[in-house]
Length: 264
Image (cartoon, rainbow, N blue to C red; front, side):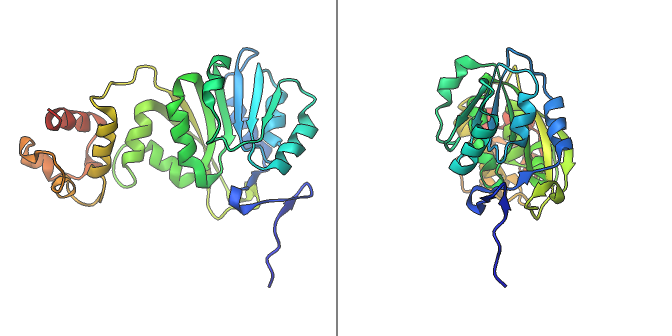
């Protein structure tokens, strides 16, 4: 049997761009209701698809809406459909290649986006890099990813959880079933709200610290000792009881304390 490519608004959806368009308006409404927007707030949307979220945003107040869309067909469709609103700027570009330095002075920004799942983390790391320009945001991600981000211990708790919780506060919103999209993905999704942390605890040699955290979680079922024994760190500085614990049993405060001992 031949595979029939999904078509929407007469345009073929492209799997390489992760195009699963949210079609259930209730989740669009909940995204917008979760943030505070007025005429002084700029909104960024990533991946507009056929423009359901774009339309909903423009029905409310905002200073401007900048939409990043990598697919020229959908960028053109949405611009022709909603471009009469002077607040809308369509940017036909891969958001990962865009220079967000040019946007900093146009804020404060709110991010509203149904993220392509295959580039969720690259986009999140870019948001992290430019976190000071964002006031808050709501994104759609895979349910599995959302759970990893908010975990505070146990299974699925790891580098991802520690990293993104250190720089942002997160709140799980609606769990979204596959049938809310076209075409339907094979997994559940989740709306997740974020706000950048205002007073981030400073970390000594921050970049090196996060490399250390990755080592600690290299094999989550193994003890700290087994994950770190091949590293250059002097593990003799740490208590034996601590070395026999798994990284998943420790908190950010524990890791910061360990780091302060090992890095001296």
